[in-house]
Image: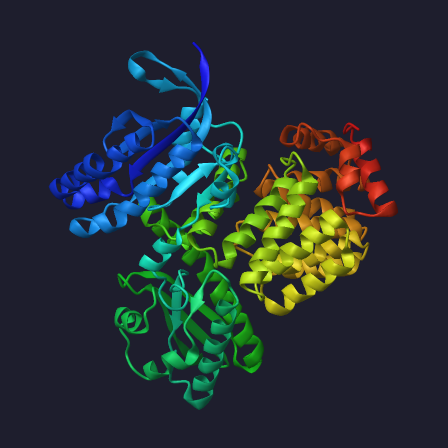
Length: 581
């Protein structure tokens, strides 16, 4: 069998199964009309041949990348006006240049075919996606029509594939003008309604108002939620409210309401979180405290309510996204699925999350969080020891965080990640300090901003501040999927501060929660050596090498931001544990 280089294209109809379920006859007639009358005739026009047809899909081969691009761009431009005559069908096209093998009866096989077919899953409806190999084969002017989407990790393809999206032509932009203003906020929305005062008098009403203000403040600081302003809900004060009706009127998915009751010298606050679409109660809580501690109690109840609500909404929104057909997901849904894979921290899921983040950025280039979490992906890749080039990954993390800040200058996560990347890779601690201070100012309730501040303090040898900031970050993230990270940073902070027993305790907490997090294992091993617990050191070292088989002390010493004697003693303790140079 001989291999040859070929320009290949894969086309399918976005949401075809859903369309067939809605109206099978009309969809099938429409597809056949487009395929026979518009799509396949253009194949011959561009010197191509249809290799295979399968339901709503086509596999086409062309003599050159330029021919394949001419066909793909022409098809997408022609389909939009043709859809005016019947049910709208939008196609996705992937282009690739790679080695293929000719089989019997005109069939084509090989890695190039597999790569092109897998790449198609990342194409957006009505758009064209191409591999770097394909774009590199185009003349300069044609190649300039593509926007870089970054590396995608395709299913069953060993190496990441650099992908590019074909920019919309000017006439297409004019034909489909963007709506005025930004697209509606995709995040889950919540309204906090005025609480009922059950026999508490004027003080109770005042207290209830304070609790509501506090809850709104804390919830509004969470970047994953869209919170309706207090003023929008004042009309519901003093009335019996149907959460579904309130949700429809306010345009929110979730409603939080409750009551305040005085009992002797204490106060009792009841809260109820409701799905405004179905009326189902998601969570019901009761909070109690002494009436004398009015302001402290307001703050405590606000934080308790917010930290209880946030993880439930995150889980519910993830379930909602998982039920959606892939072609109906927007940037926020893609982000949720990316984070679900990211949290698992196994290599396959981790790489899959990067592709989902790329799709989220392509779906809404102006939405900052996918850029922030793509930066976070690169930071975790380094921390896990999976990066083939930590310097390049750190630079990419900084670039993506800066891109997020361009889109939202108050994105606390992006500011924290940018500061972390600058400190980790460039060892520019002055700039890192400025960025991390901005992160805390923009998001005082952003747990990672406090945790990364703790790391910076640790790198600078400031143990007491490292501990206090790590403790604050952990308090803000009791239900965070990355609680293991906050526990690891607290472990490292105690190590820097010389409290090795506390470092061992939090290191064990972190590794129990996530046994695959290499930095947690490194700090735990060094802390065990420092604490004189020799009987436990060997097991820790073996666990670290199982997670990070390529670990070497010289490479680690070259990349760690720990400085001077602190770095040298940390490395010496890892060496005492038997870890290789």
